[in-house]
Image (cartoon, rainbow, N blue to C red):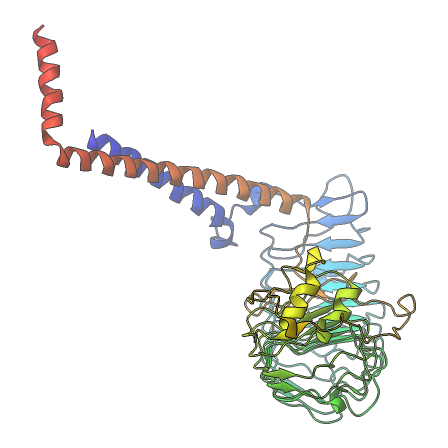
Length: 522
């Protein structure tokens, strides 16, 4: 009996382990003799929209468009996708027949260098994606002749250095992604020729030095991401040329002071994300030149006190303030009196004790409880808390958000007049455009890509007919593996119980044997 049970357990464990191995097989054996991806879809496929899909292949070079199909040529393709393949060396002769190409994607290959004048035959290119390769070097003139290029994605590579010659030939560029590389220094004039650039993503590098004219020439830049670097300080005029900037994201760095935004007014800036730094103070002078800021993210810093009632005096369009995870012990009672559009205030996980109703009266009148949080503080159960407790009883949505561990009482000393919202002159909501912001920087997984239709960084993958097929197979195999493992565990459990019962009641087994022998005698 036991030998049979053990055999069943081993059988299911072998099946489960084989199943797990099948799921990872395509990555473990990529570009080797055991690579199974080519069997999923062995050839390229051209769609009706002239997009040529060659993803998940074992190609070591770009396929010849004249040899893909016997009946026709693919030279008229406007987009070429060779993602997750085995291309190690990209040369000009491989691309010269794709004269009409507008979009190229070579993500997740083994490309180590972009050679000089490699795209000279592809002058219609508008988008290039060489992310998730082993790219270390970009030769001078690599992008020569690309007068129409608008998007360039070089993220998740091994690039150590960029300078003023790297992007000198792509003056039409609007989006540049260099996140998750190994860049340490941003030199003067590196992006000086990119006067049409609107989005620059440098997150997840090792940047510790930014020379004061590194961003010179970026007059049209709207979004700058420098999250996840080693930046501790800036030169006073670092951002002086970025007068059109709208989003400045500097989370997960080593900053101890607010970035220098005092040089010139930034009248278009609506979002500043400084989360996960070491900033110790916030002053009126830090915010005076960003009058239209709506989203101020300062979570997980070292702020200890905000005592100035006039701190946000000039920021009348402020909507979201995140001060969670600091060391705040006190905040001015009327800190947000001048910010009459505030909707979300997060002050959780601080050391606050005294609660002031004025902090949340505006937020309550402007919207719902989402994004508001007071938890993780040691509130003193005084009249302010009791009065707010009474106030939110009529606000069903806010009861859980503004919840204090203080029981309500009938104490007459807290019988004050009803709360009055001091915000009487609110800016016209129809005039003030709302800019939503969700910080999606992942300090662990930096493989992100700029979404061209959004002002945030979102995790994206290339959707192809083959990729959907592979994903479905992986899900099915995962479910089968889980079933095998569950059956094996249940069998082991039953076997253990059977052995336990036989050891605890040996006479029971002997009785069964005697019963069987008695039946045989009869």
